[in-house]
Image (tube, rainbow, N blue to C red; front, side):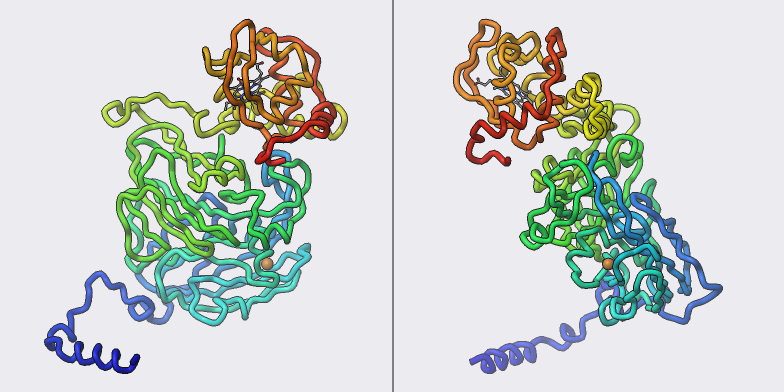
Length: 496
Ligand SMILES: [Cu+2]
């Protein structure tokens, strides 16, 4: 049967006019690895400029193939993954993602991989832009304190992921061992005003999201594909506040966006912008007018867009619990004059930025450190509480706790809140439904449990709320919260 079908297909092909069989080459066909500037390297060898995220090396600006030397060092470093949370990352060049590498199609790349003497593990590198077994992995296994070297010719243009491929491979990648290499087309890329490097990854810690202290890697969570964090550039704060990406109205931005995985596929989106062009999957074709682009684990994309309206644009993985509950959120801050013809609205950072819009970005960490030393002051609790309140409670109870007539009861001067601390703790942990009377007015609505908050956070929020806007009381301790957590029943569906 199958061979009969094949016979029919061949017969159909044979029936086509000759001109169709010898079709002219598609002018848009770049030829893959078959066509390029593949002559011998010319001139003196060039040392590749490597950059840390979110920076991208300058264009090669070359019209002929060269020998390019890349020196990349693996380092195992302990760094912040979230405010007050530390993690031991394994890195290419000291950062997550690793150093950005930029070469030109046809270049001969002499790759030197060093593994720092302080490393505990052997590592290697698999570059998706390499043609050859393992993408270099087989030639680059490097013990701590050693160096290995291999050479490849960059045959295919595009944006490629590189990663460690030492067993257990998933673990090396989960610890941050990935980055991007750009192989420019022979004619280079069109100049733009800003190029930025953003790479997503999923992380697996023993402690829950934002549980403070040094957090070890959790192999079972990784196998189960249940990340604690999903992040851009290796930490929750990497693209927030004074580390936000910057540009101006009238400029064009080019983003190189990678996804290291190891597990999740990214639905990459910039809130409030539309990608004018996306070179999806890091390839040669572009799609236009794109809202969200899918970036597979071990894949990349290049996106360009022109900026018309100033404000804070939020980079997210549009699998939204990853953005708002696991950290996959960054900011592109655009300065410049308003353009009311295009957008008339006001800018309200807190809608999407939550606690990241609050002024004192280190308040929560400061309180955590002080609490660990047993030196937590009321002022520190209030500051941390204010930040958490802004991100968690203010959307309903409003910025100054005044509530919203008939919908959200006030916390400012609330007789109900101040009458019973244990009840207030219980409301934050377990939510509240049914009629309540606050300052003589009855509300009958639903407050969901704030079960994503840990004991310290609830204590700090309530210390803030019970001492703000005309309220006055003593501090609330994490131990008091722990007691209520232990002795009251969490509703079904609350996280912990
Ligand atoms: Cu490794």
